[in-house]
Length: 404
Image (cartoon, rainbow, N blue to C red; front, side, top):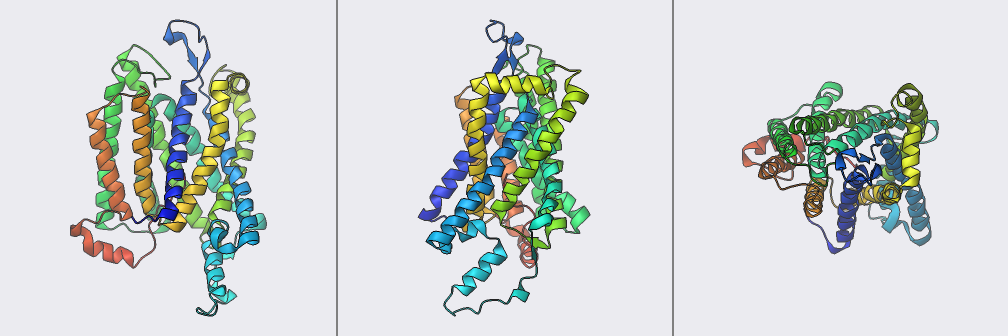
């Protein structure tokens, strides 16, 4: 991965914003909202409103529309070269570069642009993957309540597995030997990380446990539940990517605008779902995940909830902005390396704050997970699979290019 001085700021911004997203979410989960003065920590009630956190995420993504508009203005006013890559899709950018090349390259004709621009009523096609994102995000937010922040982030690496498998079923892709090897390595790594989490949960609860309980069996069961929810959520995230490729492959849209539209549609979807879930589930279970009144009171009355929420609005939009910029200016596979660094930062912060304890087995699992991901995305190339890579180089781009 080659990063010049001009791109260092983008990488740092992506790392800081991405780390903040998970750390702040975990901090919210740990915020006490009831019986906080009781000396017995078992009686404390914490902020457990994943649907509100999902809403917060989508509002943050909606801000990308504002960022896109600002970038478009700057591109128009001060020159498109610096800002165009953030507000134009690949086809528009290629056309612009050719036009501005002073005749060195013949500009392509409009007939060369095969894909249609995603605009007008067709933008609603983004709503379907948004629903997948909404489901996945809510499940992951619930899982984070019971998982350590670093474990949560590591388990999200399972996305590669499900995306690869679903692409075989629905997109007719075929995986080569090195990709199957990578997926197997990732599976073993995730299993190791999960085992380490369950083992650590059986010990005394730490500051990062938003559900403290002295019963080892209950702690282990909650850890398993959290692991299952995070892994299960990856199926919906993988479905989101496959749906986007299946139904939107014939259209083109600037990535930053796509994130903004999905944020807008997600915000609307969550606002519709919240009262439905409240009257069907929340009313009969006061204080539960879907109790709209309880969630609103907690968000409104507790600074340790709403202040991190406001910070997250900007960290989420910033992460998407920096992530898209990094992918545009460096390369898509570089994000694998950067995301691994982000997991390390989350882990280091959690250890420093006493939210987690160091578990050597988790290191082993994380190393296997990173290695498998790097092999799958082409960052590491085992010599034994060199012929397979030559075949893949002649095919389409890598399956996975996530911005979340």
